[in-house]
Image 1 (tube, rainbow, N blue to C red):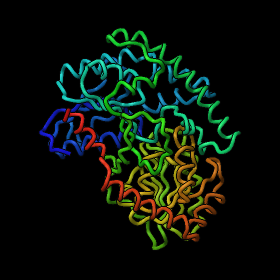
Image 2: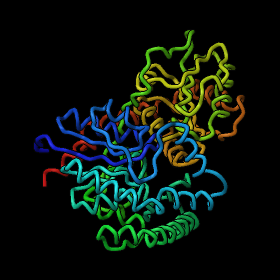
Image 3: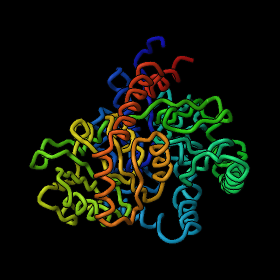
Length: 424
């Protein structure tokens, strides 16, 4: 790719926990290459943005939060109750209700900072509307697997493999029809915000992605499923593996000399304290050294630690994984890809969100096992013991680590693609 002179980017994102570090990893790399990046985000992301060398702007009229406690309250609201109620909450609090406010804030930030190109949260329609309205080159960011409903791929959130045989294909087709119908209804609800910014209606909510210059899927194409029906502006750019700035610590090693087992769940609230307690108790049954990282939303004091286990709020997983034999995790995308990149097998305990999808991809690789999120300590301990005793999952994880390394060396990265926005 030809060299690009120093330019200005505006990144507009929300602090979705595991979604923010990949975006800021991209921003950090662009800054390293000599560009200027301003980050428009929730105030909880300001310290991390500035640590990456970026300028920072908070959301002004769009909903936002200024503390982990406020973030936790919003997540509780979005994930409370049955799926229909959760969908309505997401519609009202994220996708549709604040769409005009998000768009207005992006337009105002463009006017204030005069960027040359935009890097936009791909899952929040209002952010995309404001960015597209600017007329600038735009890249929508997907910091996990590919999200839009697509023929030939299982629907996001199901944890399915692609359907095999007539029944499997019929299942996938039915789920795809239902999700597309929902996406069309949400697209119609976006029309006021689109009109306010001089844009035509979209066929469905995901149609906004087709109006972006590029869509950057921040995972490995060898990890995700593929389909010939993925649009041509979509590019798999590999995972961003940087640790968040708040995870820096040299004081994380547990005492002893057994194999190291890391337990890592969501960095934001997912009602995960009980899972962490059961995983910690499981490690207490084994001749291992255990490290439990609770994340920002759980007090380490809420997780009792057996003698061979250390419980901390955060640790630099990149460094930890170089010494780790097994990871026990909720299977968030960031944790899974960092673990696989280190060649370490996983015990996956998916709790929701994209975690069942990530788990089925780990199982497809042969790089781990799955146990229920409600599994008792004895079952978690058995899963860890299985991975310690059976060399096959570790071998599969190391093979996939080689795949990730090869892709990193041979495929355009997110930063390469971002710079490509400026070369037209």
